[in-house]
Image 1 (cartoon, rainbow, N blue to C red):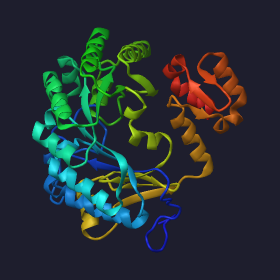
Image 2: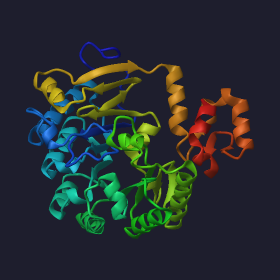
Image 3: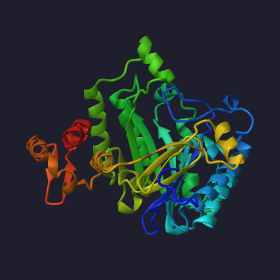
Amino acid sequence: MDGTAADGRIDGSAADDPFGVYVHVPFCSVRCGYCDFNTYTADELGEGATRASFADTAIAEVHRMAEAVGPRPVETVFFGGGTPTQLPAEDLVRILGAVDDTLGLAPGAEVTTEANPDSVDATGLRILREGGFTRISFGVQSAVRHVLATLERTHDPERVPQAVRWAREAGFDQLSIDLIYGTPGESLQDWEHTLDQAVALEPDHVSAYALIVEDGTAFARKVRRGEVTMPDDDETAEKYLLADERLGAAGLGWYELSNWARDESAHCRHNLLYWRSDDWWGIGPGAHSHVAGRRWWNVKHPAAYAGRLAAGRSPELDAEVVDDATQRMEQVMLRSRLREGVPTSLVASRGSALADLERRGLVDVDLDRVVLTLEGRLLADAVVRDLT
């Protein structure tokens, strides 16, 4: 393993640098047509990759992680998927407990799970909170039934306030709502209604992403056959501006292109690890990791993942070492998405391009930082191309 010491430890893994753990739970009740994540329904999986056995398999990788990077306090843990709450709450708590037992959770650690509104109940949420989870992110996507049907989401929008109430009663410190805009057939009024309903839930954090049609998905095939028509760029931009306006009026300020929070304490600290190119270890099939300039990813299929760990082997499929040029480019790409901006030192070589972007009102520049303006946020991909 390039970058790994003979005893299995990762060279350059610094105990005092920020460190997070991502746990990928690959199970879903149905596969949404737009999703290209590494997820599986129960009838797509064979022996050795059941929900019942997943916690023990993931814990086996937790122990491998601890041998490679420990001792190293974990500042954030994020359970994503898939739908993590397809597993019993007790299993999620066991996996978190293994992370705490082997590496240790830092004081005030942020521990998040994603959840669908129809995959939780009051008892399970209470078990998660008592077991150390501090933050929950509900995949709401839309408050409009026909939009949810197009997205093939399974929950009833009327269930969302109940799930949120259960989470608040369980004592979660932070509650986040995930939204999607730009679904075919979604009017501006539909999106406005979704935003109004989201604000009424009084979340601490909202993520709002434009629907992207990924190659190979069922949704992409529908678009190719002309069965659905994606909105044009102007409509998508209008919906982004509406989101920024409505969320801002409700006291939620943007801190990343697609994320708004009540205040700095409600920022998703785990995602900030990604955007700042800090270190994290990904547990689970297909999970990606980045530690000390080395990036690797696990085998994708849950049965192959489980088989490797059962045999005492690493689930790693492949890896790369990030060179200085690539690291700089990625930092510009990721940090430019943040309200804190890109350090000017990272883009000093792009002086003329930077001056042009500032003249066009797409960025604000001071001595230390380059920050996207609202217009720049709408054209972020083009701005990043000019800066890299």
